[in-house]
Length: 524
Image (cartoon, rainbow, N blue to C red; front, side):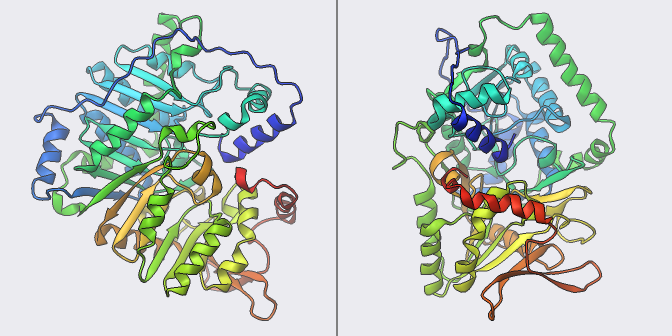
């Protein structure tokens, strides 16, 4: 269930005239606070981190993870090497092949005595939490749900009527993504946990970015995780059921996870992972990392509380203050690009200073969020008139074009999911934040800013590859008519012009166009 389903629930809730919702919450359920555990200096990950950072003082190390398979391997490697604690915070953790594979490694860590804390947004969990309850039954695993639905049924009616009765709260979701091992290393970025994020889906694969970090920035991530974990908006998964899960049933579910992981390990995808696993388990020298002053930014969890204002609670002002420093170029990679009137004005001030602005986002053919694309369409003409370069990803961007690992090897359709910003060619942001009103005003987000020409140039190289005419459509303005058109290159090298959203049917464009009749941009 993604943003499209969230919007469907919101509308169902708005049209529900009667919303009688019962609560499955047990108010007496214990909710004890806890904090990140510092690992002993001789723990493998802690010792490795110490060796890496020895000559870098206050700088943090960052490794860009653009390869989807490597992103899964990195998480598995951290889980396998952890000896004391693992903390996970995600918007979505699917019970599919890769989700169960990672869950199996988390179970193995817990069996070794590692404390595992998992914090998930409840949108994808409500009514489907039996597996999580089984994992939570392990003595070393604790799972909490952020901003939960109080009635634990997954039907559209049940969730829709809850939206009707509690819309202002349930419309705010935790979109953060973090994976911390032994308080020594962490992964943050755009990926959730699921097949489509790790190039393992035969249908649609999200092209995304993460960073593996080490050094002073890791405690910053841990402190933010603790704030969310101990927030009044986070509840233990067991707090929503008056009857505890039968221990034998819980044990059987955990055994099923292990069995499914073993079965998946026989697939071609998993075998390819095995051949690359050695690259992730060996220690990469400090020279292979990007180093520089690094800051972790995270919205305050209270941003998800509709009774509090957003002032001082979100990361947008800090990111704006950072992008204000652009002297030559601002590069934006984002799946949902809705700048709004304020964003248009801001980008115009940059252009007036001579700053080039380049944007890569999704095409209508590469996204299921048609209403977001429709809202973005209204901003294309003013952006193009001010000289912003716009590119929209093709759904077949990864097919037979070679180039970067960003596009993987899967034959499925491609959809952009990465969220990155590059200021000039020396500073970069990688995180979870979309450039839309939902991320700015409703959801909680996170990410890292690093002053590193090495990382910035690596992201610019991905942008340059992704915006080739074989991978993306150039969005242009016809000077004679003032109308928007798209230009691209066919596999045979032929240049082609489109006067409507490429590779879409008239029916799709018609349905998307109906969004103009609804004043819902602030909800997107």
